[in-house]
Amino acid sequence: MTGRDLRWGAATHPGRIRDANEDAFAAEPGLFLVADGMGGHQAGEVASALAIETLSAGRDELLEPPAVVALVRRANEAILERARVDPATRGMGTTLTGIVTPDHDPSRAMVLNVGDSRTYRWRSGALEQITVDHSYVQDLLASGMLSPEEARTHPRRNIVTRALGVEADVTADVAMLDLVPGDRYVVCSDGLVDELTDTAITELLARAETDTPQTLAERLVDAAVEHGGRDNVTVVVLDVGAEIATGFDADSEPDPPEPPRDDEPGIATEVVTDGESSSDPDPDRITRPDDQTADPDAISVSAPSRPRPRWQGRLLALAVVAASLGLAIAAVGWYARSGYYVDVEQDRIVIRQGREGGIWWFDTTRERVTDVVVADLTLADLERVTSRPRFDSADDAETFVRGLPSVTQD
Ligand code: CA
Image 1 (tube, rainbow, N blue to C red):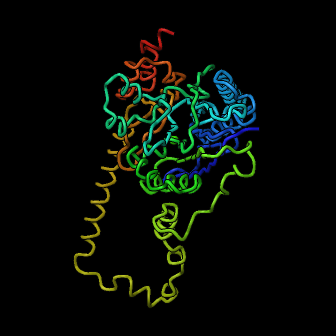
Image 2 (image 1 turned 180 degrees about the vertical axis):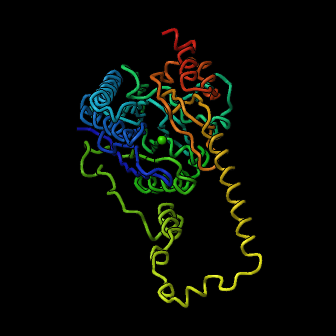
Image 3 (image 1 turned 120 degrees about the vertical axis):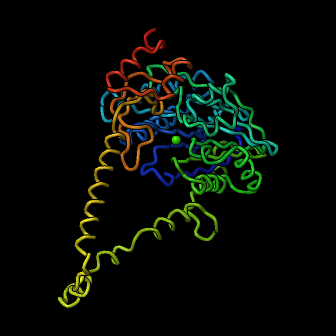
């Protein structure tokens, strides 16, 4: 049987801020995918895992684009069904992108995409994104309302307009690819591209020509974490070799995953762990009982044994300042938590209480998740929503959402 000499590697990291990793990936014969899950209470990782599992289970069916579209539909149904029987996962969704390589054709593959994860091709020293993001900023970009630079830093760049688990039906973009020896494919979640520009990714790839796919995947993930790591980041790298091997035999086994390297400088995972541990206060130092407290004499030393004449006055002044500060904090807290606004979380319109961005430690909270999804809205209505209009009550905010022209048309 003919086949291609494919080599691959994969790496993933939760990033520096998030506790959970809601990304999932496949890096196995015929299947090189990344899914970026979303949803509260870690339901996102259920959605992304279901997407990968469904495609993996149906891998042998993936011979032509219509079969890929059909299998992605099945993954969508699996996610919706899980959300139906398990209310804790309600509202979960996931992106899905990557490459599938049917065994019957030694030179061709297919690229698929739903959402804003990306598949890039590195060919002849040039990087090209071969998927089109299904995102709000991509729509603005396509309509000429944003420049690529503005799109990169747009505050609403996390809004996806197509995802699995959102609506009863979903159509994946699927295209045939000619696999050319020397091609290198990079499949990634937005945790990579939010931290690294295409120029930065290009520079990394240019320096990594001789790296194995596994080493490159780790380098890219490390770089994203080092540049901020604000989101989960996952990278699958697929290399198309010059030789034609037979099937997916031992030669095409992936490099074994390597543990984070300790011997190389500048590896972000190392920096992160070091940074976190060194910034942790020494618990012993804080909880260690002070020997002097057992000594009554020592206590009298630490207390003012001879109050100065104005000691009580100073204490009183301090109390007045503290009380004023308390009132000021209460006032800010009241202001910070007053009112409601409409916002978008991933693919869904939500109503939040408080002042956008929060003030001091008074964060906003999600008051309601409406059943209106981004995909239902026209671009004009989406713009009205992303301007985050404010309302006195949650009901007023919901009335606004229900009254959007593209919602009332349904
Ligand atoms: Ca993400």
